[in-house]
Length: 460
Image 1 (cartoon, rainbow, N blue to C red):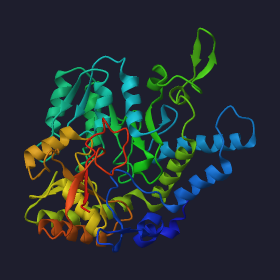
Image 2: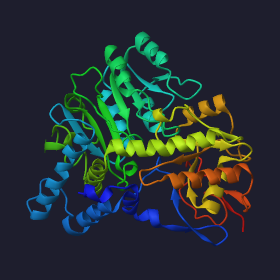
Image 3: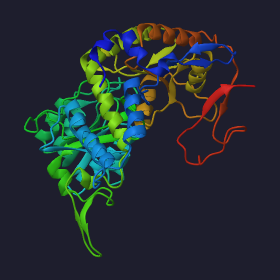
Image 4: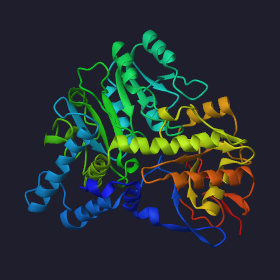
């Protein structure tokens, strides 16, 4: 576990991340320190997490459960300790609640959809949602959808009306938008849902590493029934996620993926399935990934979630204030930085999101994301209400997204703002062309159904 004394300053925190020292080559051949502002997509692991992961893979690697040899027993003990670490990080408990480990947040949310599927009523989602908190429920039947207001915040009155006039079994809502960073009042929503006999499921993929989450006691009217999150947005490697949920409901549901580890006895005609969490963890889990996830959460606890929140709020406030003062720049979402994480989606008049992201990367070394961020309903609503988008010929209009992490600094904000000014003033130097999986000189892949995978690169 990381030593708290090593992180008394943000420069010490930054030094814990090897990626923060990386330089990238710009289009003119010069080199610049990478400014990574794509934390809403994935976060980098600090050294302590990387070291723990490598140590397991090199010195402790073995499959868990049902093994007698020393490595297996040691791996099992380490893995099983991760349940309590994750539950404790979100304020949960493991008597009436349970943690199930899966591969990503989409799988965790799909498990929620699986568990509540037999219950009577409909699922209520919102226009804020990432596709992962939408499509798993739609796969199992029609959903209700609460709208957002013109500024991109959730219309709470509409949520109440939908709960009042429909039989709703589950309210599924994000803890923070991956497009605007806006955070709904999750405990107020939980209380409203419970008043109307519904459960609540929180997609905390964006929230987990940036704002403290408290599921609250199950007897509290404002408690969270389900919480889903993943390591790759919380400073650990890809491939490990979790779902926290009511143990009784998880045990009542049939196994999510029947297979190895889910049954206590199997005959030619019958199978007796175990209780949760193993009931839903079919097959060998990503043991190293789960161990790394737990180490990352301990790392965040060492720094302090409240301290992280205040640091990132300062970055967000500075960036939002400056960008809103820039002519020709549209910054999407509610105006109050205290109600948002450090996720800023924006457009520059007359400059496509494809071109803006390419020029920031190629000419300033700034890694942003562009497009519609797997939240098409929400982005469509924002573009409709706030306008500002310019599309490349044949491309779908979107936005540019810059998202802060705990090792970003106020100087990084200045560098982003200079890059946005460069775009607004048309001071980029390269000539760019649109590329895709089917473009010449691009490695051909299984990309026939890939979601809007287009980018721009310098010509020549």
